[in-house]
Image (cartoon, rainbow, N blue to C red; front, side, top):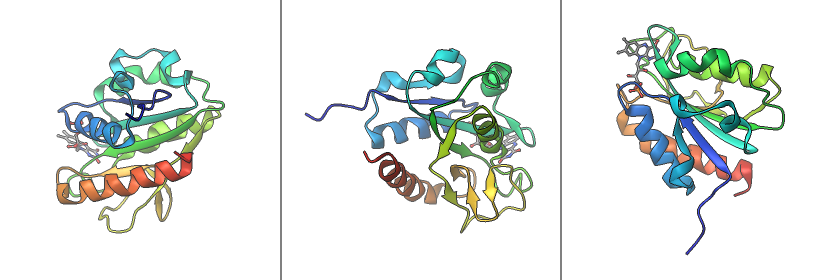
Length: 174
Ligand SMILES: Cc1cc2nc3c(=O)[nH]c(=O)nc-3n(C[C@H](O)[C@H](O)[C@H](O)COP(=O)(O)O)c2cc1C
């Protein structure tokens, strides 16, 4: 049997469980050890720097804010030295209900990673999405990471995850 990946961690925060479910689905598709898929409220600084590759999952709440547990951890997060760490991000949001703040959380985390010396990989095109503004955008055509919308477009989620996982595998040469 093929060994599971034991040097990539997924760290997520989730209020109502959607981001948690997606974190597990991504973990399964990438064949990452279950024990390395962690809720941010249960992590310490060393969980973010232990491996060269990290995947962060975040939902956006209250008009452009980080999900509750990410928000609680954010002061500590801002102090982490991400030098030498490759970070991929995925985010959940609601394009129609929060069209000016769609997946802002992805941008809030990505900005810190970049400022603190990390590399952000796994960018994702914004083609096909419908929103007005997002801090999750790296430029006019690209999100820092995978953007999902379980509120309005759950039917696209599987296809989006599969496309992104393929991209992650290619970029990491897995
Ligand atoms: C009160 C409230 C505020 C929200 N604010 C935003 C927002 O500012 N931007 C956004 O993209 N989504 C927003 N959302 C949508 C959530 O991010 C979305 O429902 C997500 O799937 C929740 O994931 P979770 O259960 O893993 O936390 C909001 C949802 C609620 C109920």
